[in-house]
Length: 375
Image 1 (cartoon, rainbow, N blue to C red):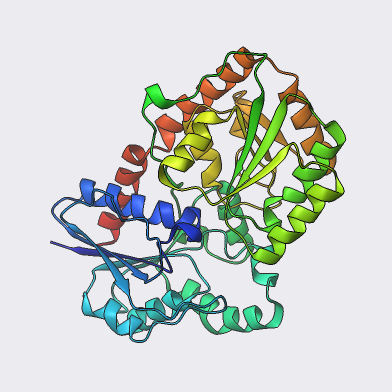
Image 2 (image 1 turned 45 degrees about the horizontal axis):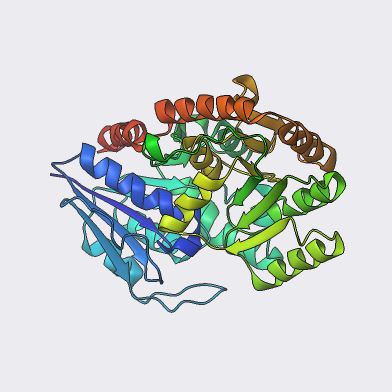
């Protein structure tokens, strides 16, 4: 029996798509590798996603005590806790936190055991530039060293693969396995067919400048559709949220744009069921789990060429445009002048595509084969 340990900074809902994907992948892999022991280690947070989840018996979720702060969450003895489980393989999901240091310490003590690092888009140029000199110093002291000493780098898109190769990571070291999504039951998938009812465009992701919300608001101010509203759901920095609200007031979009705050569980499902289309106008995205989630609910999607979702254009599942005001405006114009039946057909194609490629029942076995090959 082998021990597979996954470590990530947080399993809180506020941690975004990486937290959701980390626990879902651990569950999917533990179900496939049912004779092995699986551990999901994180630094303790609030509103952790495992509450109420059905966790397989061979998977243990461990939350290490943590002093939470916005700069650098700190856990005493995290590396020692990791080493105490004596894992045969460690899978780090996400960078720039203490879990990187813990994995580096474990690898130095266990040079013959495999370490997998999922960069999760956190080595993209915009991510490294953020926080300036401090992040550059941390990168050269910790993260670059971690990348060198790892046995595999887990990328989730071809865009991320190419970016890593450009940064000097050997192609032979990179494994491409996309994130997965939990497919909703078919009877709960929204299929709107009434052209006369008001329609909802949904943004559901982390509220961050890289997500392109400035483009969305400005494009809406140009089009001003009467029969559409836009729901913006997610958690973000209070200062950035205040700036977005000021833009809504500046553009006089108060009757059209709604900030719903973070949505979890049944509220999140209701948001997808109530929506007619989904938008993620990002400037940079290594995968875009929210896009796959929206498609699993049968929603046509608007996103940008800065995401790895060119298949949306290729298979007519939505709009895939330049990350510019003209690109987003053109896509919104196309969406808002399409019939409900046309949008429903787009959404159904997207749902079928995601189910065949990104359901956890498809992703779990692929990740399991990587673990087994390394062990």
